[in-house]
Image (cartoon, rainbow, N blue to C red; front, side, top):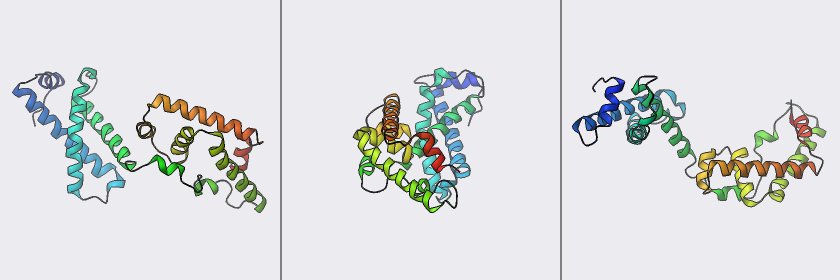
Length: 217
């Protein structure tokens, strides 16, 4: 792979229809593929179980997308670092985003309307390690009220959004895409849902301070 200066990279990549551009694109893709492979194999403990061949294929596929992303952002390069360093950062961000999306690829909004407990076990076990039987009973009562409030006070869409983000840990961008909306609209939806839930609980004498004292250490 040719070693280019920042200016040489930009000139070559913008040389539309010329051999210089094709060579620069090929070199860029190979550099990004190498950087992505290193990230997947060395920095992602959750991928340690994959064979080197699988990681190499992932890196090759992601490098194709990353090359296009770099080309789309050429005008934003300010020369404050080496071009390859800047391009590699774009590639890694794209990789992280793709892996995050892959984790929730099979996520369905239908899962958020299933029967059963909404609050995870870790929430139910929060607080002092040896609470009194009275406090355990009080916590269980409050948790039941919260679960009921989620379904009673919120619209179906507010319910899905709040449960997905606050309880299930679904990334905002993934949920926004699945719900056919954008991040700003989703933020407002969740904000309104939190406000309605808070008001509903306070009407039953369950304030935020009360819950923090009840479940705090």
